[in-house]
Picture (cartoon, helix red, strand yellow):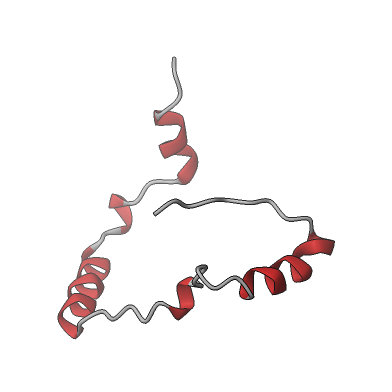
Length: 69
């Protein structure tokens, strides 16, 4: 499956979304019926709770680590 990212002007966005809704093979992510088990939810929530604030980095710090020196 291929994915495509588009930049739509604000004044054309509503028209564009109405057009896309009428194309059969395009599915909205919200319509995919993805289910996550209770076990998976618990696992993720536990990991989030265990994350210490000191383990987190600021986005700028992460971004700078990828820049060439």
